Image (cartoon, rainbow, N blue to C red; front, top):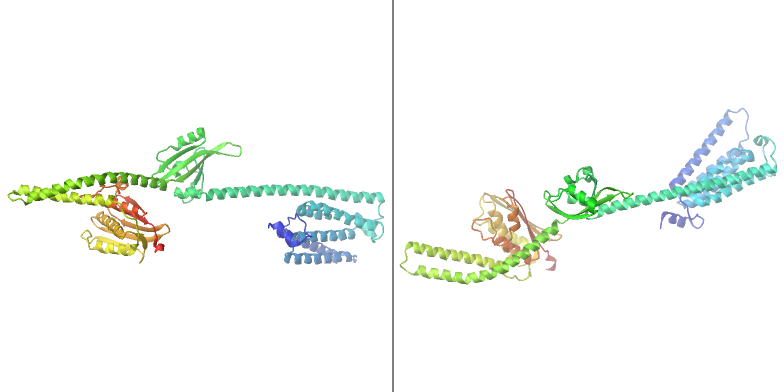
Length: 554
């Protein structure tokens, strides 16, 4: 229910249907009325006090008393929250009565105060719209009744008020008609002006609402919106765009060049603006290296209300996660193809390798060989065993795994891993290992495989800090599952190595097989999780693993 409907419902059937007076306006009317009548009352008292004779002011005192009484009534109605429409009607009717009495007391037909009726007509026309004609008629009737009653000697007329005899019938009729026509014309003009004002205010309100809605849409939309002038200077950046571009205060960059805010590595903004002028809309993808963000952009002209191009509007989205997901899928496909091919080759190599190793051992057992021959046969046996171990690890990497079925306490597994790691020969006195995890952290998975993942990642972190350093292992429950992180301050890795880290046989360690992270990646994928590496050469590496949290299914 709207405000006007609520007022009509509250005021009952007697309230006009199209009122627009607010409670604040009614309070102003009551206050102004009291101010005017108090001023007149004080003036009368001052005149009477300074005069040597007593004027017949009883009628004035009566008017003052009635006005104060009516004002008290208006105030009571207002405090009782009576409908504003009903309050306004009561006040206007009371004003007509008071003005009529004042006009009579000051001369009736000859009173110079008949213009006070115009204030009632203006109020009615402004607040009651076309109901102003009704109050114009009531004012004309009240004025005509007073004049007629005085003209026909029904009401007494004090001679000193009229200054002489009453005019003729034609003069009285002319006076009445002039007032009636004036009242109606004033009502017409004020009503038209009030309607025009209301339409203008309604149009302004619609414009404000539309502008606010547009602003809310721009602020709430998930994609970035950036506006520039024709020279590429920033005019607007919405909150989503500010978050993508890591801009703390969008207002602070107004007037800056778009090249400073969105530094696309592969594109020239000058050429993009020229292309947008010609083609009206262009779509590109670009990389911001400083933010490690991949963006998809659409750029088109920004037009004003006269359809004149005043700048450019750029709509952009962060495609970084899509790019990472595409890279993960590409890596999965490549690794699957390599694994399929390599597993077949590994099976084919193991059989002749076993024959070579066996033959070498048999030759070594035959007596009469010199020292050089025995040493060479020992090398063949040792290298055969080493190669066989590599093939066994690779077959383990490529072998299909059963679906995770068992509930696992990841916190307990991490504590066991840290205990073993602290007792291993690879951990030296300059290494510090910290574990930060809750007492219990449940997930579903294959316990042996997950233990192998934790061990491989922990060993890699220790081996990346040959001179010592800190390894911090963190585990916590998150909205999307369980998050585990291995954070070291070791040697780190460059971008090329980081992108190939999960591929088989890629390693930076002397004597490494390059299968540790490949096995980790395969296990995490089998568990429906994800793994990412963030590394800076010379500063350290962070490996983040996310596993589905299915502890609620236990």
